[in-house]
Length: 468
Image (cartoon, rainbow, N blue to C red; front, top):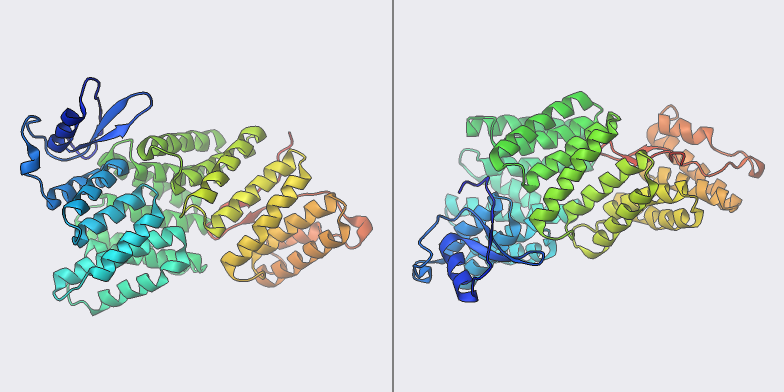
């Protein structure tokens, strides 16, 4: 069975012992399906099911099985095998690292972080090979923490970069991964030019080392580069790179893989920017379907991201009721799942929800959502003097004016305008929009009218409400 194939085998009539033997023989683990018990396969080589495989197994075999399942995009099976490997050898750093990766792929970021931290604390290195393992551990931990809170992973990133500088060997594909995370920090800091240069370097480095562009690791770097190009406004080039990444990943993994779902979601973002709402909706529904089947649950950060994007598309199509349902569902996931509940993500969810509520005529609900979102966004940026915070405050001011809280509404809108004027300049479209709607006196206060604002990735945080 290739890494691109995933099958389910009905287990009706199998006793517990027979199922366990089949699992041991063929590298499958019991997975509870809807109304039936299933066995899901991974990439472990097939053996005679009647042979007592327990005599042959080792911690290494379980690690290989788990890594095969990770590559196949099946985190549930990967977690099962990695836990088995760690049971065989509690001191195995490789087993702990594999379990951390499996948990991270399955969305259990909090558990993954703790296991990788413990593995890193145990690991000692004396040779270049052991140093490579240590760098990989640092990188994996940084990736997990970055997924939860990008600023929190800076110490691990700096350690990994220092270790790379100290090492006297040729670069490896793992080094390119560290450089990718460095580029993501540049994006977070608003340095899109630096991030673009870094990611172009990563793509070139990977293609040279791997000897081909048709590798999933190259596809990941292309997807990162496409995000930066999109944020810079080069939508056609971003679409071209995403199309290339999606083709590479589909060829490598098949149609049912979480990385394919990620590329579909990014492609949908581009289609949304190009006003192809039906196309964006189709891709997002495909991505969501893949994620729900692969993860076996909706409690995953990636699912929350897909729900948010799909809700925005539905909102733009005028389906307010469905958009509202998806945003509420997204928020439930974000409040429950560690790694999905970052302040930036929750504030974005609340901002989108406020626009839907406003379009539905629920001013009180919109006010509540925005009053929760503004301090969260201030926490993300570390200051109230940021364009995103100002734009959201301006929207809150509009809602307060519509509710009759004129004095506070005018004060918030004026403060928002001053921040935008200083940070973006008086001629920026967002600043001009705020100036146009800025009441000069109480009697000139207008109705709630949310305006557009883009985040660091070039995606809309709030759109003018469609007329229902």
